[in-house]
Image (cartoon, rainbow, N blue to C red; front, side, top):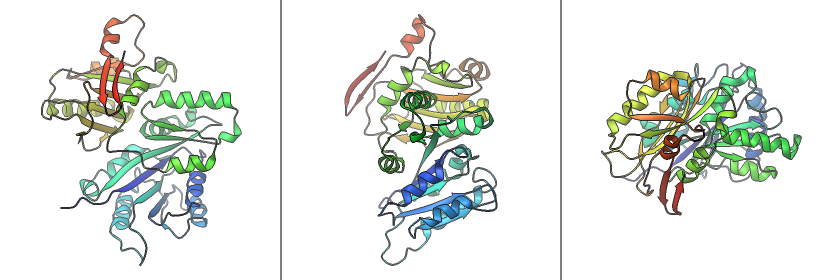
Amino acid sequence: MTAPQPVDLIVLCGFLGSGKTTLLVDFLHQDQLQDTAVIINEAGETGIDGMLVAEGENDLEMTLLANGCVCCSLRSSLIMTVTELLEAERPEGAPPIRRIVLETSGLSRPGPILASLADPEFTQRGLRVSVVTTFDAELGALRQEQFDEAAAQIAAAQRIVFTKIDKVNQQHLAVQVAQAQLLNPLAEVLCDADRQALVRKAFVAPAVDEPNLTEMAVKALTATTLSRTHARIHVLRGVAMPDISWDALSCWLDDLAGCCGEKLLRVKALVHVTDCEDPILIQGVGTTYSMPRRMTRLRTTSDVLVVITRDITSDEIVRQLTSATVKLYALAAPAGDSNNERQSSLSFTSKKGSHVLN
């Protein structure tokens, strides 16, 4: 049976006023987007953002989901809309849909959205979901009045796109970029001064076949100032016990989700289990985990497990979990803690060569 052609669904997030719609409109002004469909979600009854997008959408397939949020009240409508886009007959001469851009409302949290799209039927149809989050360079992203939603959006992102770059100086921008990288060391950060280049890069689907976990681990495990970026955000590393089985690891992941609840923002891991000769890729946003994947083309000699939480520390999690299958540590280990330093030494072998982190 021939595998279906992939369809990339890009979930475009960002808090109110962070420049999501402007970024999308700029993208839709480009040529050769006949294989792209757009879904706009607005919390209110009047779809103002939808009107702005429609003005320049170049005859693309566009659907407005208004008067609710796709992370809660409109979840079933989202599933129905994506299904219809995948099944609909295309106009004569039009290419099949290969990309869907979902612009969420500024109050949406990506976790429930990804849970809605985690249906195995979508996976069988080749749907590949990624999250792109806009980051307001002028005002920052974690202001008190928007903290919970913005933290969830940033932590979920595979790609963080800076907006309003022209309104700040280079020193201010560098501070904001550093904060974004530390809040989510798993994400690619885009802050190109060339607007056209920024827009193009923002909507290229992140690579999913072979994640560059070496660079991810380098950023995460060497970010010794993470604990100082924000008192409420915690980036943790996990160390699985030797010879762990998939059943034991999956039970620990479920326990982690149950323990943290909405405080769990992101999980990404590449782990060896006794049941499989290849390393297993695990990704989670909120309490929703994607289907685990065997990484047959990626060789590693050690594991990587990164957890991002809000308002709950590694010590608090450990006290609540009954299983010691995985040990959790804050990435910023106390100076002189030889055990933490030893635990954080990881080595990798990939097509790009060997890498050792100490």
